[in-house]
Length: 107
Image 1 (cartoon, rainbow, N blue to C red):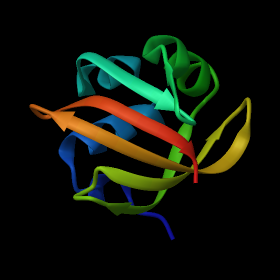
Image 2: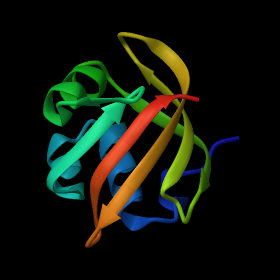
Image 3: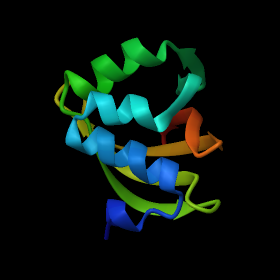
């Protein structure tokens, strides 16, 4: 069973996930704090390059299975045209209502 995006607890995380699923680069950038950062499988990545490759140009989509930590930790089935589907964990740091950092990797 999945958690509908509109039921994600944290508004900043909800906005970011909605933007990913809609393929909306502008909404994605609007959900991020200035200087936002991210990591994938424990390695820091260039956020712009990574999201273009892993999300926007490859049809990335998150089906959230569960949320914890007031909606700032998610387990999701993530899929894109490059890698197919995989179970992933996402942790978000939110500052001033925007996502300042996210860390993702296989769950």
